[in-house]
Image (cartoon, rainbow, N blue to C red; front, side, top):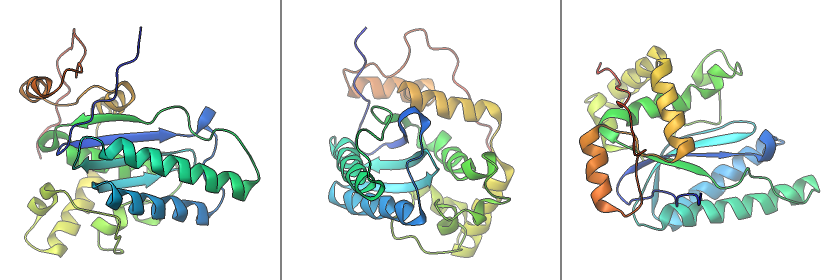
Length: 231
C-alpha cells in the first residue's frame, strides 16, 4: 500500500517528530544542539513557520509549529535536515544518512490539544530521566515560557495569552500546567497521531479538515477520540 502524503495545512498547528536513524544520537556536543536551533530559526523565518515549542533530545526532536503557507513546513524541514546533516557529518568525520526516514507530523486541534502538546514536549527530558525538573534542561522551550530566558526562536501561540493577564501570570500558569503533567491517554494520542500522520481533534474538527484536502485525515474506522479534560 502506498504511503499517504503528509497532511500539512497552513494556519493550523502541527506536531512534528524527527528521529535519528536506528535511534542513533544526532548530537555529539552542546555546539551541535545550538547549531540545529540556529538552523531552525533561520529556516523557520525563511519559510514562514511559527515555532511554538520544541525539545531537542539526544536522538530525536519534537516541534510544535504553525506554517503560514502550504509548502512552508516541508521546505523548512528539508532545508534544516540537509544542512544539519552536512554540518554533523563534517564535524564527526562521518558519512551517510542521519535521519530515520521522513519526519513525522500530525495536525492538531489547538483548542483541545495545543497546550497539552506543549506540556508533553517540555516533559520529554523529565520522562527520560535527564533532569529533575523541566527548567534544568537547556534544549527546550520551557525556559522561555517560564521566564528563565528569552528564546528568539519562539513565537507564542495565541492561546498562551489566555493563561494570564501579565507575563508573570502566564509564566506561573504554564509552569503549573507542565507540573500537572499529562495522563497516559493524552500522551498516547499525541504520539500515535504524529507517528501515523492522522489529524488529532474532535469529530467536527476532523470533518472540517477533510473538506479542505483530498488527503484522508483520519482512519476510516476511527474510534472515539481521546478527550483531554478541561482544567
